[in-house]
Image 1: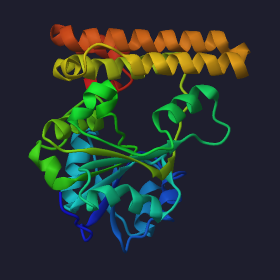
Image 2 (image 1 turned 180 degrees about the horizontal axis):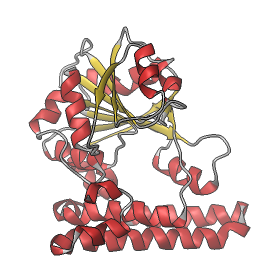
Image 3 (image 1 turned 45 degrees about the horizontal axis):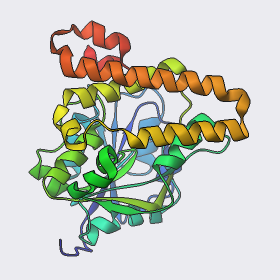
Length: 305
């Protein structure tokens, strides 16, 4: 693709009661370079006041969905490039945005995502997977990368990610989906001959502490999306070498540095594994299962209402 340095950039921040988080990003975003849209799910705090203070565009979302809400937001902005940033992912500066969109402007990729780093004082259960999935080494992947990278080929994140809108239009945009709209969109873009760039120089601070049950439910949702779309599994095969490598390195670090946490780490791994496997089976075979059954296991309760 040819270089297009003058492409317009819009930033979408989905919010819900974000008064303690939103301003941290709005302070450093240069709105002379970017249009910012806050798409809000009926916050009851001062989120909208903060958005107005920084002269953001505002749209109210009554029925949030990871896919359709972002689809509606990018069409409202109607910029050449759309950047998605979650309310609790903190960029270092405007330069993080500039670095994120550079591969798109340079014609090297249609989708990019930045490097996530854990918050200070985050636990090993939060920080290790983040460091593993977001290393200090950029890369560009295409559909040909499947042979080497497997399912990681389609990995990306809308916590801090950017898309070339015209290429999103070619695949029909984001779809109504439980979760993983970024993963599915990335897959379709690569199948359409496009490329994804991981930009390790574009840094965002983002991490969460989850309980065992929360991890089970999150991985159930991930498994459900994979099972619901078996064509992706057919592309990458059933080998999960990356997951096995992560688990092996994680337990090596636990035993070397925090052996007293070994058993908790073991149970967390089991909960994640079971969540994914059950979710995959429900996604693959469960079209006739009642929504209330799926809601019981899912982390996105509202989706099944």
